[in-house]
Amino acid sequence: MKIVVLVKHVPDATADRRFTDDNTTDRVGVDGILSELDEYAVEEALSIAERGDAEVVVLTMGPAQAADALRKGLQMGADAAVHVVDDALHGSDAIATSLVLADAIEKSGDVDLVLTGMASTDGTMGVVPAMLSERLGLPHIGAVRELTVGDGTVTARRDGDVASETVQARLPAIVSVTDQINEPRYPSFKGIMAAKKKPFQTWSLDDLGVDADQVGLSAAWSVVTEVTKRPPRSAGEIVDDDGNGGARLAEFLAERKFV
Amino acid sequence: MTEVLVLVDHADGTVRKTTTELLTIARRIGDAAAVFVGSGYESAKDTLGRYGATKVYIADAAELDEYVIAPKAQVLATVASSAAPAAVLITSSLDGKEIAGRLAVKLGSGLVTDATDVTAELTTEQSAFAGAYTVRSRITHGTPVITVKPNAVTPEPAPATPVEEKLEIQLPESATRARIVERQPRAATGRPDLAEAEIVVAGGRGTAGDFGPVEELADVLGAAVGASRAAVDSGWYPHAYQIGQTGKTVSPQLYVAAGISGAIQHRAGMQTSKTIVAVNKDREAPIFAMADFGVVGDLHTVLPLATEEIKKREG
Ligand SMILES: Cc1cc2nc3c(=O)[nH]c(=O)nc-3n(C[C@H](O)[C@H](O)[C@H](O)COP(=O)(O)OP(=O)(O)OC[C@H]3O[C@@H](n4cnc5c(N)ncnc54)[C@H](O)[C@@H]3O)c2cc1C
Image (cartoon, rainbow over all chains, first blue to last red; front, side, top):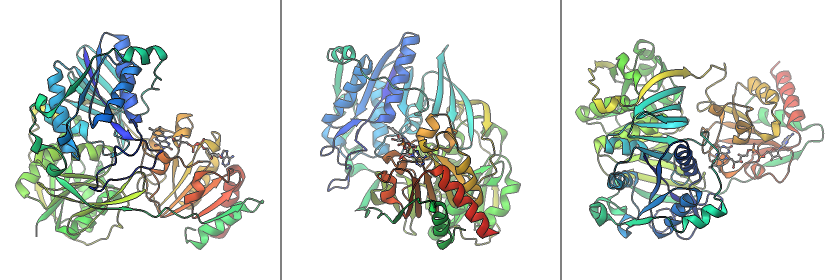
């Protein structure tokens, strides 16, 4: 069985994330990491591989430094990595991203399961897996907190908006997992050393046969017209509880007409 | 005027408040047309009319409930290709965003998610990087597909009598590949829905597992209860009530954070709350930097006293 895990290199949320002059996310001037929500997908792939027999490939689309996210995946235990990198991809929207990833998944060949995180921690849209499902004609189960793979099918517990559902689909399938599904492992020293020798492929748009005018900022189907930094919320009145804190709180709520 | 499609978010015909918000936004842009998928339309009818739907497309077939997400995207795509709407509006929730992603690919359309507002000219406003930035965008290709966050606007009634159009939907095989084999609706709590609530009282690790004081304050305020991930991970409160990046995003009039430090991932889910109140025993907790009012103290004494005081005031 072959599992492809889609991962994204994102600016660290604890750093001072910002936009560049063309209103795209600054991916160079801010320290990047493997999107924490993708670690859950990598972990799930590795634990499936440990239970049965599977090859785990981590796949990303992103600028040169996005290779770091793949390296982290390899250090955790993935078998191989694929990096789709091309200058023309800068500024691609979710639609273009899904186009490129769909082609990359097809090029990977004989994929049984595509695993993803629930959303990236930078754009936080959470739409790419559903888009891939449309493009590849594969079933997608999102918001998954429990996953069983076997006998050519996946059975997943899905935390939907209003109900918890058990959903079944035949393989090949796409599954996005939440942070409730497992506890991602840390790379071991052995894993870090082993990662250096694992297969690492780099594909350009030409390799995928994708036309450069279908991707990137100029081909995006939405434009950002304005980005403004919000003034930080200023702290209001902070009082020490001298036995009266509860009453002060009630008083504040009454002043603001909440009671 | 052109139609603006609104996907109705409902449970067996009980329309969620978010849908009345979307209808309100749709009326700024054109004629509000609701798309109702599933059973229970008769119960939904009045609310949709009251908030100004002049048209309702109804796709009511038991089969539609057997599969996740894909059937709703299919119905919307079918309506959109014949009605040529100015835009399609969907609630920004987990399900809503998956539907929107599929629809955008089907229609070959641009997509904006998590809008906090949409103007008459279809400019969207979003909040980025956990509320640090405001971003305005425009969709330049196809029929704009926009998901809008709960509490983006105040729903305004504008009574209309909708023209009803029943749809015959043939689900293509591709929409039936993920089958629901079992479903457990979330247990009702008797409190308002978290995403829709005007007031949210949330507890964190500082509750030490006792959510009693949080729930009692919530109940005197008529509020929903939320929790931080630390509280959820400790098994003190169900995940469905988690607020933050990997839980619900809330934007209430009042947010009370009790025993919550205010980590960036938590702030991502509550930063756009109008008024923020914090109770925390650590004066240095980051949550105080964004609080309109804060009490440095033990929540186990501060919350019960506040609850008593409010009860007294309300007689
Ligand atoms: C990828 C990722 C996603 C995440 N998603 C989320 C998310 O969706 N939501 C979320 O909440 N977190 C999320 N987190 C976790 C987040 O980073 C924090 O760990 C979490 O929010 C901390 O919860 P807390 O504030 O309850 O606990 P802590 O940070 O431990 O804070 C507890 C606070 O309670 C105070 N306290 C203790 N006792 C008392 C008392 N008796 N009275 C008053 N105050 C008291 C302490 O002073 C402290 O400030 C995520 C993290 C990652 C990496």
